[in-house]
Length: 309
Image 1 (cartoon, rainbow, N blue to C red):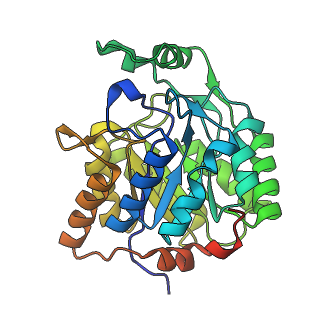
Image 2: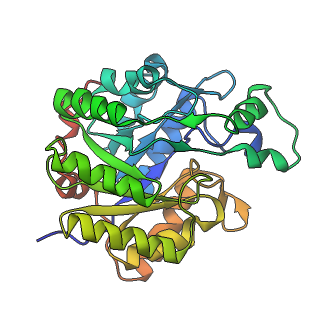
Image 3: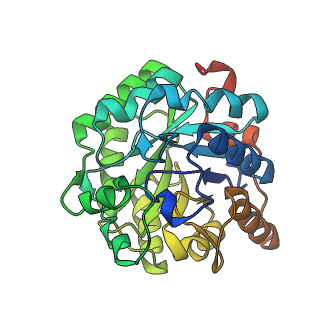
């Protein structure tokens, strides 16, 4: 019987927001580690991690930067560490997978399709930029595509899945991505029960509203029956309403400063603040939060003793 406990994932820093948007967004390795550990202590059983240049906060794929915080988190927490293979839309596939291949983690994210990934509307809000790269990166998303071809996906599945025993959080930004996931399942490249992250509210993907969440769930049911697990993340102010709805539908949830910088109407002072908020909501709904080991069992992970950091 499937466990019905809710897995809380915390996406600690990401590559979407920039330091000028919030003083609380961690980008130095020691700050990423500290906020990740605090989020785990607050109830997050999975930590989804990106790296940033310690000097200016720009997203980086450098494995050496990842290795400045991955062992620290592992030593202080038993949370599942989930390393991005998405990085940012401006990175090559080789860059995006370098840290994961070096670390051989229990989990990685895997984006299930190429898409427009528009961050440039964030330029519309007047602000003083701390670094020149921030508006440049946001503007670049107007004319670039976030590439995740069938070949790219197959490469990641084989190198990390078959090669490292890593399992995946399959990030589906639209309905077509679910069909792509089913395609790879049908080809035998996805063993076990897939863990699907419905991603709502990114410009270029499906919108963050109840009808779209219900539709994503309906199509997933059609394609995978009851042989899948799902979680939901929603961008910006839709974060809490959408993930609460997901939990009432039998899903898991993702929070973190990668997805939203806010706690209610105020800037979140840490990732743990968001974890505590959703944990209180879940417990108020009489739902149980999964521990890291329960999450491992639910997702069929290889265990923290079989990683390379």
